Image (cartoon, helix red, strand yellow):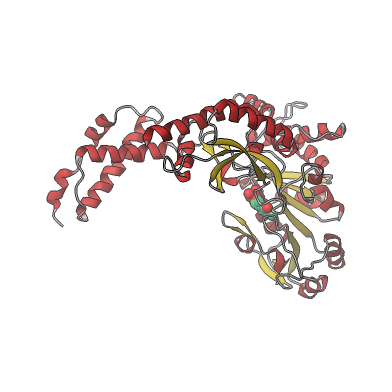
Length: 467
Ligand SMILES: *Cc1c(COP(=O)(O)O)cnc(C)c1O
């Protein structure tokens, strides 16, 4: 290829001058991005692409940089109706909880100092007792997430010449984001011993698989799907009884982390709680902190004191430990649950409030929003169904209320409207159903209503301007 093409390559300095200030980004990042783009242009030219004019090059680089800037983590309005949306950061954390986190993290704290003695303390003492109380467990501890909890448990309980883990074929699940139970088992050095059929697994299947190399029995909550029809599996209690005969530990990866009876909230299925699983004498249970628990990303492990102590002594535990912010957020959330339970109430956490919101109240908000926007047939009140999401209670559908936006045909397509809402500040995320873009109010806190109104007005304004 001719290198004479390269005379069309814009200089980094000139592009930077032409771009001017992009105040959302630090200058050194802009410089690095421009260099990357100019380098990419050089490769394209060398590969024989037609050269761009300088203005075209600047326009293309500017839009690439602005697209990059949109990837900054920032608040968004979740109109999807999916309450624990992994792409949208899972559970929102209570403002009061974050207030404590902020106070602890922006100064010094007693993370590993025992204020009673002035000596070095342990970072988990207060939180672990509260979590154990909440989970109705002998003991509890915390690591970075539930996946890490499972790896730690496997490394401790299934290793060496007893590294086989027995698991039913009906529980070899993929949780999402590439988290597959069989792969997790393998990376932790355990050997998978699958038993039964996809739809039916019996106690006897487990019994036949037990041998001198068996380290533990694992149950994994199916989380994000359900099985119906010709299906059967042993109860937790039956598996525990079998395990006791052979002196094997039973571990349950419960995932979702319900701490209260979910069927007492909204029309939800019953999601097993850690307390229920532990009442069946399971040795250890692990759950996520940022699903139904409504806290920060964490893996909560609860169960028998002896096993928790072993996990904490495992050298790998140190690599998985949480920082002061996560520990503080968990501590405050756990206390919120415990305080509520002493008066028989539901804890004051955003996720619980969303689950509890009355359709009537959502309708009132919707009517006010629709009226404020005043766009006649374009913006109306609709019906929707919210879901828990985050791999929890896949069957449960919660009646909800939506703001439906049906742009005038020919003026703006639904994908264009979605993009305009995403492009706003804050970005608004909805979903499309039946020729309308829907924004579910159950996942939008009422205090965001005025911001939402402005965002919808803006997006519609743009759509009529640009056509
Ligand atoms: C979500 C889930 C996990 C993974 O939890 P993270 O906290 O995201 O690591 C593991 N197991 C089950 C059953 C789950 O539902």
